[in-house]
Image (cartoon, rainbow, N blue to C red; front, top):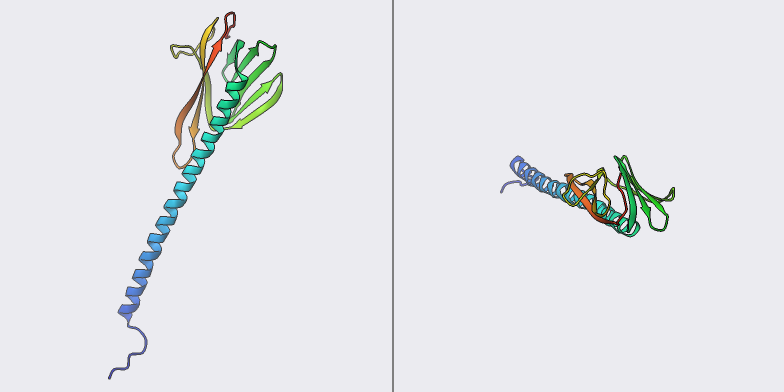
Length: 161
């Protein structure tokens, strides 16, 4: 009868190999799930901020009489005599009413533009439809360029400079 105390070297190596494979697969799965979570969280946060921005701008920028556009800011003069400014400073869009900041949105915004119905950047418009385009990046593992386009009816006699 043999004395079978302990384990052989081959059994030990087989155990270490199986354990290493289990740890490797587990690590890969955890890394993948964590990356997916970061990606989804970034996209969800950006989309949530864009929806909030769209809601606020749609409500605040109705019925302008005059719109002035210059590179990083739009000024809307409303029928009620209010002045609303939309300014892009870095990655922050601020909405001011009569000089007071009412809303501030931190988004990965690249630029803002104002276009006509033919999708051309415009300098003047006496009446008709204008489109405010806000270009931003969806964040996450991979950035993706998107734009938010809002239709703004400019009433007769209004001017975009």
